[in-house]
Image (cartoon, rainbow, N blue to C red):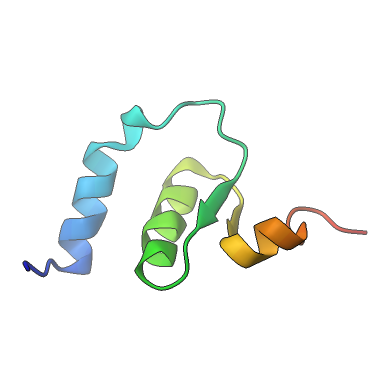
Length: 64
């Protein structure tokens, strides 16, 4: 197993960001290490973020 730094992770995500389709409306992160990756992608693309459980429960987005 090879561990990488957060800076290396960020660089890898940024390098491959153009592989994510432009019509994505929501990023759903998988708990634990997947949330960090999802958060970075959401921040770089300015897309809302939620976790898997909230997505399944419908608890995401603007709720009035």
